[in-house]
Image 1 (cartoon, rainbow, N blue to C red):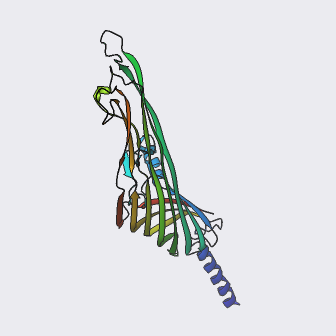
Image 2: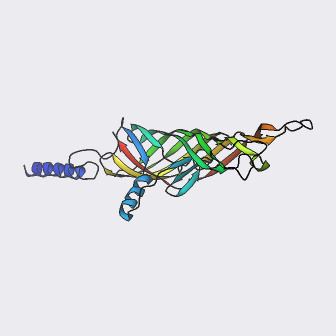
Image 3: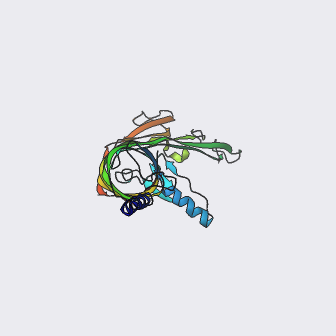
Length: 300
């Protein structure tokens, strides 16, 4: 009888120890992801910036995409969408998905779809008729930066290790993207004529920046801590190959005068010309991630 009591007590103690090993909450909720679970992840860097701003009293910064240069400004720093930056996840925001095949294997998806544009006016006065005795005329120069976009998609496989709430993981993924660097259009309200010819120089009315196609193949390794049931905070480094190819840029200009090659005595008129920056550019990057990616993940 005594042996049976000791055996039952041992089972109870073992069960209690297992329940308190940190893998389940007091309510019996599992901390770690299980087979069939899905997760959605966010860039945790924004969370740390928000917490820091809350303590130092500063406002939260807003990410801005410059559609003419493909540069993202976030919190006072800039990141260019190059062969390394976009692949390492250091540019702007992206959403990350996972589907767990089992407790140690997950399929990964990531996506970033961004658009940018702005519109600005500059107002002033100018001498339209070239007569200093007449009143200057109002004008407005309107500049539109539009159609800047970035679409980055990735898929990969993740393997996990660890028997506690601290989990290590590693794997690989492929990334593909398209980056449109936008078009800048300038509508100058100053009318060109024999009296006002913009100082005799050419002015730019439109710049259609070249778009880029990017491709990457990389491995990753990271660590994840489950601070609440099915909620984790993790960080990872990457290493891989990134490639980007960029097309040609077209620039449209206008000036007041005679056409090139026109006969002597030809009257002045508005001349418009479109030029193309020839030669596509390619870039390649083989390196570790420029900075680690901090991730906040929710599993369900």
